[in-house]
Length: 205
Image (cartoon, rainbow, N blue to C red; front, side, top):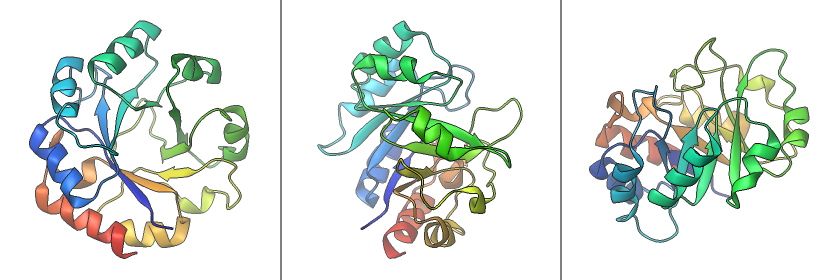
């Protein structure tokens, strides 16, 4: 079965269309105002209005208010929610939209327990733990910490690049991969050549 791919931190229509044309399955829009890749709901909506059918549009949040999730989901026409903070399962599940829960992995992280706790999620997005940062650091973590028998689909994130995505997929065999900084010229600005090369790596592995 082929591995899916999400290009995250989209802020420009040209980057979104490049990602779609290269074969990405999902686009991520960061609605955490402290992020360098933050986009307003209105601007995200302008982009998602031009995205063809069967491409998922994902809203990325860090400990948001329920009103903010509702507002952004409607304005940006989101098909999936992604929670990167300390949100509880009950919070994540209240919006009548599918969601994934991001887990920042470190040596003592019990991913099986997280999968059981967030059993209503569509998957666990595994990112690198960096103190004080909810994600987007561009750093990898020890992929050996990922259990073979995780009850939920694994979405591998954290420091993926055109250089390591093939080895990451071979080792982890995830349901999907998620990349942001690994395909950028600068924060929030994607590089067309890097997107195309990254997606070739996903398809050819």
